[in-house]
Length: 70
Image (cartoon, rainbow, N blue to C red):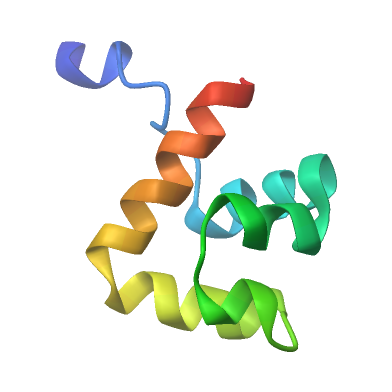
């Protein structure tokens, strides 16, 4: 339990993180910062979550960007 106390992502779902990034940056800016097709080509939360859950490197980039804005 103590180990999670210092984790800023603890209690945050990937969907919550993605929604906050979209509100903060918008899809266009998000797609420029993290170059993945699901952010640039007909973006949606559903399709992006599907990709991010399967692709560790992309999820890591999203989490890192989120930590920059909190």
